[in-house]
Image 1 (tube, helix red, strand yellow):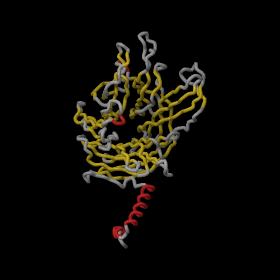
Image 2 (cartoon, rainbow, N blue to C red):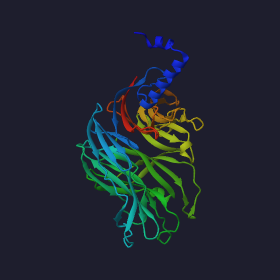
Image 3 (cartoon, rainbow, N blue to C red):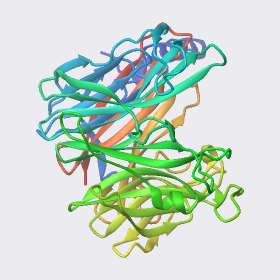
Image 4 (tube, one colour):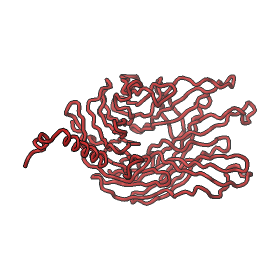
Length: 460
């Protein structure tokens, strides 16, 4: 049998062009195997694919390692919310469609202002923003519900939090809407955007709109400002504790709590704050400089203890043996074009290193996705996404060191797919990483989208 190189050498230039065209079209239509392109700058260490599992198409995907050593993956689409449990070898243990398909129009009571007549919803949407593991091997997924009402006067809207509890057997235990309990002076919330396992359930974080009060104690006519709000739910959905960031409120800051993590029983999180009002003059202040604060939170009392301030906006906080690693931006306004930084802190919360891993002028440099998984004390894994030359997108996983250099990376690419979301979490073993990425077909190709769950082994 003649070799491929011999056959190729015997073709005319025209024949070679035709063959190349046919092969190129087949590659585009069929897509390159997602794991076929691996780039390792040093040869070793490297990322090896242990297994891959395909799930249905989704707009967003979230994953967690469960307490019984398996995985729960939650998929979000506009009207369909699904959850899957995967075994350690990638097999499907159970699948659940857990959220009701909501009607776009239905009669409801307006709610807290009960003196007003009932209205008709003309738009209602449920958004899922994450998933956490529970002690029984199940999971709790969370997000928010937004409703727009057609009132007799003008359109109005309402936002609430949403939590669903899924048991280890794949059955929906309960689901419900969550609202602040402080009454009408606390306005709409932005949905539950962050959570961390705690007790038999978890802690859930959001922002609420807070009406200012005049010196007489009545609501002021000034615009509302944001106040951080969080609550603790047990396994049955009962509210164990509820708190607001009153310390920041009294100081005139708008706040949000993000990236909660537990380390040896202590809860740490990020509190992004900007002073928005001068409490002495009650005048609005210009939009200030970024000011990220790492705080220690007491869930029972709601007290916060500031530990460090950074002149950045950060999105991820990861504890390591020698301190913390943060994923941050140095932009003051536009996060879409901000420089990406990886910030290392020691146990005294002093900055050890803060290399730039994505430059505003050259966004193709570095990983830049901001999903950090630590590797020892001086390196971390991260995932990001880049556009390819022909309109597709590639997801990259890389190992970065304290100088910001990419020690090793691996690319996952399909020419006809766009990667929309990706998550990188630690796997069941110390050297395994779980990458979850959602992909959808280009509008001009009759190909269905998918969600790909990949277990990577990091080989040193």
